[in-house]
Image 1: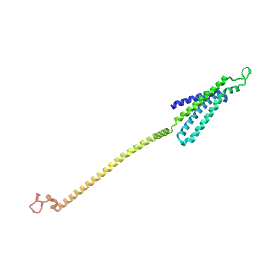
Image 2: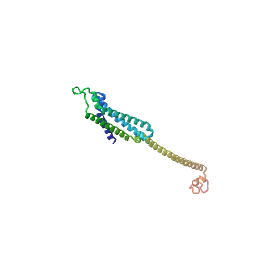
Image 3: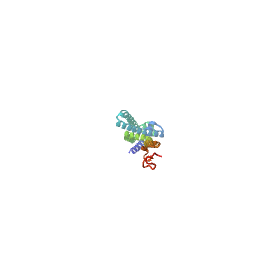
Image 4: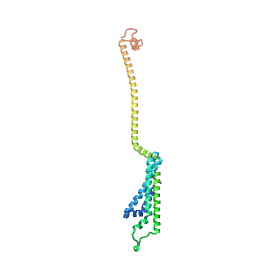
Length: 249
C-alpha cells in the first residue's frame, strides 16, 4: 500500500510539473528546458515537503516529547507548501493576462485582446493544477504519516544489534561449553586422585602389617618362641621334628 501511494505521489508531482509550466514560463521567461527543469524540481520538492511534514506529524502525535519540536516543524513546512500552492495557482490563474500584457500589438497593428474562452481555459488550468497539487501533497503527507512506526523501528534496530551480537554470543557459548568439559575432566581427575590416594594408603597399611608379621616371625624364629611359631616350632607336639619333650635340634 505504501509503495502504491508513493508511486501515485511521484506521478502527481510529474503532473504538477507539466501543469505549472505555462505559468512559470511567463514568470521566468527562460527557454523551455530550463522552465521544465524548474517545474519538475518544484513539483518534486513540494511532494517531498509534504512527505516530511507527514513524517514529523506522526512523531508529534505518537510521542508527547516530540510534539513541540516536530509538530512546529510540520506546521512550518505545511505553511510553506500552502504559500507555494497559492503563488503558483495565482500565476496560473493570471497566465492569459500576462500573455496579453506581454504582447504589444496584434493583427493589423491593433492591440491584442484576450477572449473569454482563453480566460476560462486559464482559470480551469489553474484549478486543475491546484487540485493535483493538493491531492499530491495530501497523499504524500498521509503516506509518510502511516509509514512511520517508531516502535517497529526500535524493534528493527534491536534485531540489527542482535544480528551483530549473535556471532559473539555463539563464540561465548562455545567457550563456555569447552570450559564445562574441562571442568568435568578436572573434577573426574580430582575424584580419581582421591580414590588412588585411598588405595595407596590401604596398600601402605597392608605393607606395614606384612612387615610387622614378618618382623614378628623373624623375632620368633630367632628366639624360638612357641607362642608365635605355633606348629612351626620344634617344641610343638605336632611338629615332626618334635623329640618328645627333648631339646630342639
